[in-house]
Image (cartoon, rainbow, N blue to C red; front, top):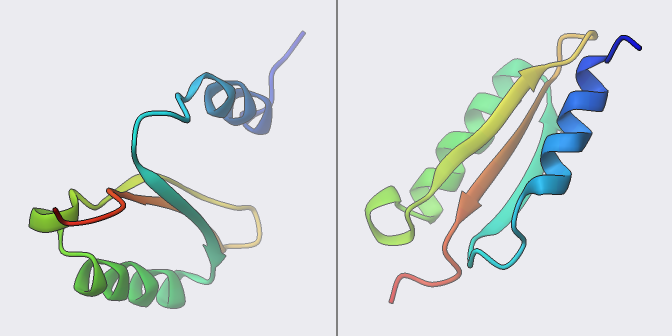
Length: 76
């Protein structure tokens, strides 16, 4: 049975621990808007304080970018 990338992504998402303390947001946007959204996210939740990062990303067939941002719930 051949696996599609979507199948692999779903399987990997199922393995992710939901109790690891991070908040995640997934976005699907055109490339330029995705870039702007990620920059705004890092401006709002600085990497040094919230341990913010782009957890995963992929380019969809239509050219849009799907990406997941993760951060800690507070900077304390």
